[in-house]
Length: 315
Image 1: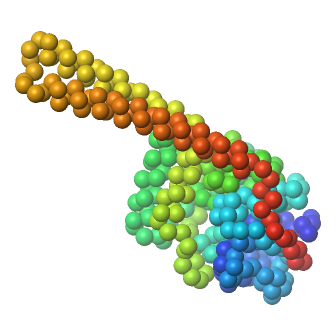
Image 2: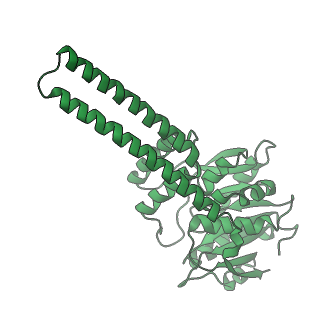
Image 3: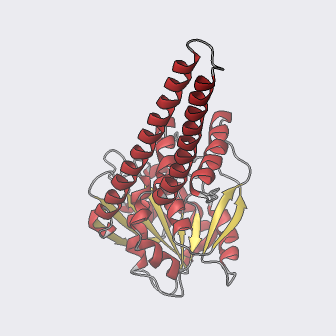
């Protein structure tokens, strides 16, 4: 169990990658020794589940939360954080990190130092030097611009973060947490401190995240701010609709005054009416999507720990 000697509680999701998790445990114990308590959230692994031997070989204390099924990276983290938030006290710090090596244990002290400021509740890692392919980096730049345009928020960090217990309890109460961790941190109104940290290299294997999954993950971040997106898209659609109405009135005026060439009036008016109808349809679709998103949030607002099939304490 977590006790006062465990200064940090590490929460990490693991899916079919127990070999990488074993290396992570070795590195964590080498840096922090017995100060850490590791909560490994096994996200429904079948072929390579996390087992007790990973902990026994490193002498690290921790817990294995085996989930009933594969629920995805974000919801696995949300489950682990919800579980941990009920066990920690004001003496502990919580760290969320991936188990594949891209979040390096040696960078945790940087987050902890940033968290030491009285005006910071969550310290997050904004990637400095990146090692991904050029296509990924271009997509990420485009995504950040689009995210800011549609939500009014700036997002430049992922799941690697450290937080105080009060922040963990607040995040654990948010239904948005299982949709997108970073966006939920922004939506929580907690004070976020940013650290520039380079991404590490994977311990083994290749990433299970493909491009379509990456795009879906990005748009889930926008779903957290569905109301802001609806307002901004609605204003854009309203502006376009007003412009098309003015354009249609101008076309009618030119036709009445005899300044339009044969066939021009019908084509221009038809195009403007089409734009007006499509704009209205887009606004309606966005409103419907917002309603679906909110219903999904309500449906997932129950206790995340209900997904846990078994809990194994390893001291």
